[in-house]
Each structure stands twice: as C-alpha cells, then as structure tokens.
Length: 281
Ligand code: NAD
Image 1: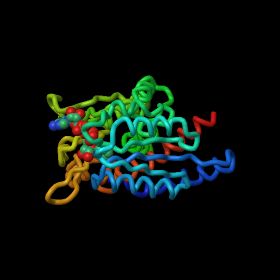
Image 2: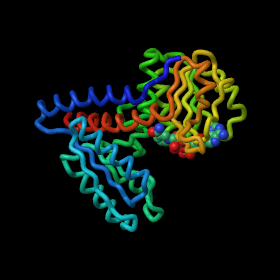
Image 3: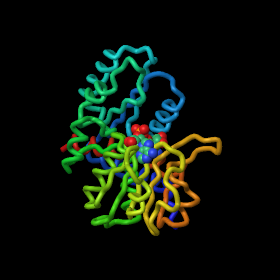
Image 4: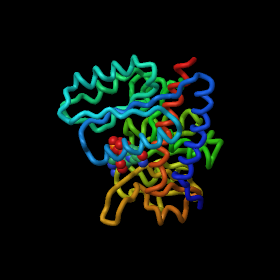
C-alpha cells in the first residue's frame, strides 16, 4: 500500500512555488502578495493563519495579516476588502472562517473580487469551476486532486465516490474529478447505502467529519482513498476513514494527520501565485 505523504507532497509543491516566485520576480520585478484577514481570537484560526503566513514567507510571497477583534463591525471589514481589491500589491485575499455571528459570511465572500479570491468560494469561481473554465479552486479539494493525480495520472473513466457534499470540499472535489473524466457519485447524509456506493469506487474521497466512517469492507481492492476528515477523539486526531482496516485493501491512502492537511496550505500559496499570473496577462 502506498502511504500518501502529504507533508512531502506539500514540501515539494512549496519548493516548485519558491522557484516560480523567484522567476516571476525576475520577470515582473514584483512578487505575488497574500493578505489574510483574521477576526477574533479563536485558537484554531490563529494557528491556521500563523501557518499560512509562515509558508507564504517561505516561498517568497509578500504576506500580510490584518487582525480585527471579534466585535468589529461588518462595514469595516467590507471596506477593508474593497481597499484590498484595489491594491495592486495584493494578489490574493483570504478571510479566515468561521466569522463572528454578526458578520454575514456570504456578503464577505462576495465582496472579495473573484480574481483575488484565493479560497475559490466566490460564486463566480464556483460557477467557472463547474463550467470547466479557469478559476480559483478551493484549497483542500485542490490538494486532494493533486495527490490523486500523482498516484494515477490518467483518471479517465475511473469511478469516483465523494462522501460529503459541502461547498468547501465535496462539491468542488466532484467538479475536479468530473473534469478528469471520472464517473463521479456524490454521496451525503441521506444516501441510502453508502457502503454499496463506496464498494463501486476506484477512488474515494471522504469529507464528512465522522470518525472512521469508511470501513475496510467498504473499499474495493486497490482503490485510492483520500481522507479529508479531521476529528478530535479520545485517541487523538482521526480521519473519516478507518485507517488500519482500509490500509489492508487500498492501493493508496492518506494518513490523518500528515495527509490532506499540509497540502491545503501549499495549495493556498499556489492559488495566490495563479491569481498573480492571471493579473499580469
Ligand atoms: P460539512 O459538515 O460542511 O459537510 C459534511 C458533509 O458530510 C455534508 O455534506 C453531509 O451531508 C455529509 N454527511 C454527514 N453525515 C454523513 C453520513 N453519515 N454519511 C455520508 N455523508 C454524511 O464538513 P466539511 O467542511 O466538508 O468538512 C468535512 C471534514 O473535513 C471535517 O472533519 C473537517 O474538519 C475536515 N476538513 C479538513 C480540511 C483539511 O485541510 N484536511 C479542510 C476542511 C475540512
């Protein structure tokens, strides 16, 4: 079984991006810039943002974090986004989620200009992705996609089952696999026989949030299994896939932690570089 090493894949991607940023600097005499807006002091968000900033600096991006207290008015945040939309030194804007209740998430997402939407959440990018046009793609499914492609470069005709239909993971993952000519089934909490669906799959991507939902006897021999889930349990962090059981049948599997997680941040950097390149066209 191939244990898909997300840390290694992310380090390789960062190395490629570092070179690309250096080349862009030579060509344009400027580097892509990523600005993250962080509202409030929730510990996980603080950690994510710190990691994003560290990785951005490592590959040579211009990195900025703008912090607001969780009492900040929505208007102030929207005005700041407008200012960043018009700032030529900013290639990508990310507002760290979740937001305090008094701030309308959708309004925030739609205020970020689509060409700087490094999270790929703006309806314009969602629409472009589903139409098969150029767009920013949400970072977690993009990371999953790149890892799947490394294992199996030709996905045409493969059967893929995506477990979970969130806007963040399941839906964009489905679109990426469709673009590769997979036959994709998207499953969710109302799916009648999830085990039977999974047993059909050459590729399973599980993004649910239920510890070890996907069992060993749900997986076809030699399937590729990508585990997006991050669940805190008494036994530490576990994914949505029963790792020990599934590793006995799968061809390749991502561990939790050390699988999808590290690739998510590397893909944010990739999206920032892509936004910069499109803005220079
Ligand atoms: P979500 O709660 O928005 O969506 C969960 C989806 O799972 C829903 O579509 C729901 O229909 C489906 N679902 C729920 N119960 C189900 C069941 N019994 N059978 C089949 N489907 C079921 O979650 P999300 O934001 O997509 O996150 C999913 C998981 O991925 C979470 O554990 C989250 O922490 C993790 N996550 C990891 C990363 C990363 O970088 N590794 C990034 C984002 C999210």
